[in-house]
Length: 121
Image (tube, rainbow, N blue to C red; front, side):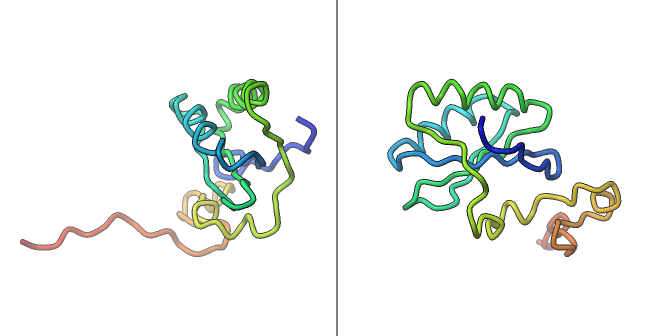
């Protein structure tokens, strides 16, 4: 991978990818089929920019999957595009610091919502 190593956020390492729009579903299916490795978010569907949120514990596996996919579809690892941090899921990732994780804060500093209360019948 020729892009600098991405930052680890809350146990997930974002790897930004650019590919043909018709290949988004295939890449999503392949990466998410490996349980616990990672998940895919579409950043810009018209520009076919996606982010693979790879579990820190499976980072080597995630990178190997991406490298293998590059042999089957045209897929480029890119730097984080402008506006990528606007994705709601990226904003919900817990603060990576121990204090933030204990307090249940996301990087913006707001508290995360707790479990939903059950309505009385």
